[in-house]
Length: 522
Image (cartoon, rainbow, N blue to C red):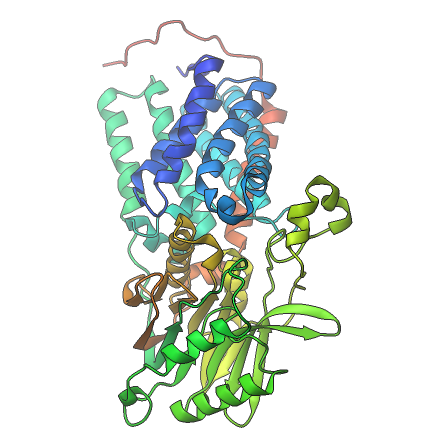
């Protein structure tokens, strides 16, 4: 017999557990990287959601989300103060509240619609985990393109589960993580199953999740890449003189040993970070001349970041620069950050915080060009800063034939906070997911060259000028994650929503709840 779950916690305790779940979840992410705690945090959230009414379910979900994001994205307050930090955290927490209602309804309806062992141990964990991913999908796409930061899978870049992203992507790993926790939470109530069998089921579930083998990320040949971290004054509020960041990049580039400039070991391309080539060399003849001279000296193209203006619109742009030819290709960032790189509906939002809104004096326009360059015969996928969290952009790179990923970023506005390491963790997962080497190059750090297996090939200490030169393997594999693309996310989220709808239509009257569980038979 299966008991219909009542609220295991009174509301006051559920709220406290939800509030504690936020910091516990965050501890699974960088910089602490205590990744097992992510599972503990998920369990705390699910336990607090069970048996609630709609209003209290929303409250518990909102508290959990607020507690998580206030810790997880505290770096947004470094220069702008508490208003954007609290506003962003609260917006994301509202999605957690709505998602909490759906998860609570699943705990209420599924056992009534499917009052069997299969219903409780088979269907319920799948539906709950699907609804969790549905909430992550909504927060990552709405409003204004969403904010995908903080998906539970993004905590696993250094765990054995990191290898699973090549099979089922980041959303798929989130689904598996929540499924495992939800399944383990159901086992104590499975009174038809002997205690020994429950332990065996728990062990089998954990083994199944963590025994996934690495995808065979095949490579063919390599390209020698130099990546330069100038450590210049690249922050929005640094008030640096014009060209200061460009000069720091030039100075560090010239420190690359002469053996890498010519001869057998010469580099095939040089990569600079986001916003490193300012003023725009396509309009500034002095910067254009310097890039020409550097490209000629190295005998290699440069991939640099800048800000371009076309048709009275501003773009956050990556340029492929070749000596004597200038910009032979360019990519405009497709996912500029709302309220960071542009203000959507500025006239509506300005009255709420005019001083903060006016700080964002320029609005970047989302780009429309493909995000792959042909650099001397090597197909390089281009990612600019928060582009790295957009699943679709990774898919676009792979469809464009990318053999390596160049992830240019500028983390200067976040100082020595967790943001740098959180972004690097996502980049590491992207390398494994795509089966491609990835060059994560920042103005100030954290900069690393990461292999298709997630291994660090080379790195530069944060907040110090430096450069990396490495022979970077060129990927040839097509991983299941990139082949199926967002279909995985749609599938698992759809399973959750569809399962909830079916449970609603098929639910029966409440089953009797036993005050004392029967002992297992035999």
